[in-house]
Image (cartoon, rainbow, N blue to C red; front, side, top):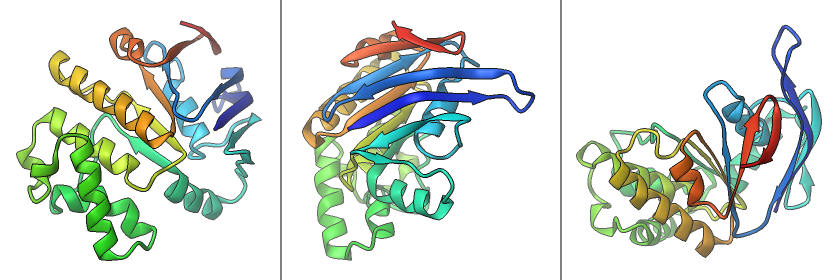
Length: 219
């Protein structure tokens, strides 16, 4: 589902941040990349998402090679094929939980009735069906992250990218969120890539890799 080949990215001054990065993620597989702060984890994730351009190498999703020269095409591709889970949730406070989850569908032109149905199903899948009409501000941190997982998967993306998804959560809520993420990825058959500094979070993935010194190795 995801193939990364020879990916390299450097600082503006020319020093390499990482180079020769290569790995793959199968459909339904969850891979974690661990590393210290400043190791380049988030930059690697952003490069795979097409938000930053690599200095060398290529990324393929479902066999398609990303064209980093066309920002509009990349944005449209992300809208339909990528789901994001962020550390800071990024739920819009003036929308209901269900409306937040349905946003990727609205951007994709899905009709209102179908948006509501699929958002409801996604919330049920993460245990938040009863919270659909509430505003995000009334949810706990763990509940907001579960809503963010529902939003990331509601449009059935091929690739799910998670950046420190448990970074703002206590241990109990982190465990719940990781279990929801694992279950959601398996059910959706998506390829999931998570970057984290947490060994506990990485241990929940199907396998873990470590980014250190600009190179990727088994954790």
